[in-house]
Structures are given as C-alpha cells and as structure tokens.
Length: 411
Image (cartoon, rainbow, N blue to C red; front, side, top):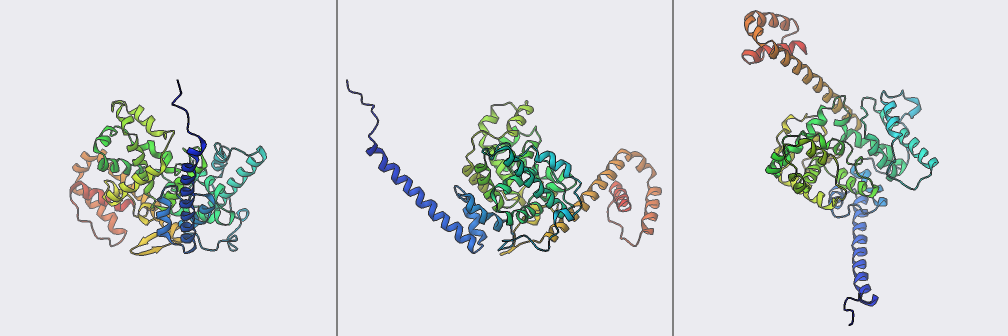
C-alpha cells in the first residue's frame, strides 16, 4: 500500500518560503528606511510609532541612532563633553561600594561568548560608567538593579552617547527610584491595581489581598533584571524609552491580564502563591502583543483617571513628563539642571510629608488629652506661631486646627 503521508518535494515548498522571506525582507528594509529617516529629522512622533510597531527598531545598529534621540541627548554627540569634569577629579559617591557589589554580579546572562578577561573589562567599564554618573550628579541615590539598566546601554550604545543617554534616563525616567526614600516607587506600584480595577474588575478583586510589590523588580529595572536575553530586553527598551515613564506600569498590568486564567486557578485565600506567580515573568513572552495591550489600556484609562494619581508628587517623573515632554503641541527637552531642581523639590516634599505623618500620629495617639487641654493648647501654639512671623491662620476646625498649627510650627 502506498504511503500517502510522504512530505512534499523541495520544489513544492521552497517557492512559498522564498516568497514569505522576500516579503519579510522587503518589509524590514522599508521599516529600516523609515527609522533612519525619522532619526535624520529627529521626528519623535514617527520614532515612537515605530518603536511600538512589531519588532521595534529591528536591529542594534538602528537603536544606536534612535535611543539617544528618544532620550533627548544633544545631536552630533560625537565626542565627550569638553567642559565636563573627569571622574577622577570628583569626590567618590556614597553608594560606590554597593555599585561594586552589583557590578560583580553583572553580565550573568549576556553576553555569553566572552572570555574571563573580556568579562572583567566589561565590568570595569560598567563600574566606571555608573560611578562617573553618580559623581557628576551626587544628589542621586543608587538603587540595586540600576546596574541592569546601565548594562543594557553599555552593550548597545556607542561610547560618545553612552553617558549622556544614561544621565538623561536617570534624571527624567528613573528619578523617582533614585530618591532617598522608596515611597515614590511604592506610590507608582499602587497605580497598577488602579489600572486593573478599571480594565478587569474581577481580576482586580481576585488580587486585592496582595500588595503590588510583585512588580517592583520589573518596573524598577525596566524589566532588564528579569529578562534573560539581550534581544528581548532591547525590544522592550525600544518602547519604554519611547513612551511616558508611566507606561511601564501599564505594561505590567497587561502582563498580569495575560496570565488571567493561571491566576484564577489559585484561590484568593492563598495570596503568597499569587504573589510568587506574579513576581516571576513567564518563560515565553509575546512582547509585541503585550505592548499593544498596554497601549490600549493607556488610551482607555489614561493616568489622570487612575485612583491614586492625585497622590503622585507633582515633581514625580510621572507628572513632569519624562526625557522629552509635551507642552501642548510643543516638545520640551528638560535640562539636567531642571532635573536636579525637580529632585530637590520632591525631596523637600518627602520630608514635609514625613513630618506631617509624625504630627498626625502624635495627635491621634494623644487625641483625648489634646481635646481636654483645648483652648490652652491653641493659645500656646498660636503664641509660638506668631513669633515666627505674620502667617495667616488656616481656616480649619477641631482637631484638624490643632494639627495644622502643630504642622506649621514643626515646619
């Protein structure tokens, strides 16, 4: 009996494959031309659209041109800044010991074809890159995992654009994570349940028993700490550098939704297991689909509609707009000095909030004695307050009045 399951002859297969290959090559060539043209004219809208399209910027050669533009680095950055102080002439940063500990653990997954001496040289370059940035911006605080981000830029960008690009990324995309407090990062994380509550209320309820700390490593390191291959990380960086800093939160929300069935298999009464699942990215990611879903979530539920958005500092990167921000129809590239000013204002706000929380806690703890003392306390506080200068008394009543007075005095 003849075997009807024989495979088709090569001449039956190859024409179709050749046609598909030719179509794919033609599409890639066309997209490369579009990317190069957008880079030539520094067309940010075109670059953002290309970054989100399937495959992103396609190749590392094209990323070397596109990424610095998206980060707002100056054009024609073909030589180091002559007026910038050298690393050796600047005092060491307080976090350099931690930098070295992290650098020693760098380059675990990629590149995987280096000799021990090449790996040592790469680690030296990475340490120099990070410490140079920190010495030039000594107010920034290093965080564990920052080296994962710097490592990606080190491997993909040419030396002249490397430090300027990392500087702008740090000041206008990662600034909330480089403050002396983790609370702004936590404020960002808590926007993820807000997105889920609008996009998928049943799933949000199912996860309501766990804090969104499962997303910390991913959002903090732009997913560079969790993804094991450089092409995957680079594809994700295409869109994260092109989009608003809050987009990483929408991306994680899309990632959570993509695991909906898996998560519903775990009872909500087992939050530890749910947290463990969400803390690890799945082995296989369809990045293009995730980017598309995240963009749809952004369009449908923009940040200003999220519960908790009002609690985000006005100086946060989420509200100052990232490396290249929009002011109406105009693109605005903030300066490094502006980044420092925003940083310092957010630090002052953090200090004030901490003092206010301390006062509120003290008043709540002593609420009965405070009510009993009443007018005597108010008179004493007003006397102290007035000696500090002619500040108008806030129009509040009851315990809130006492709290406001103590807060003004404490400040």
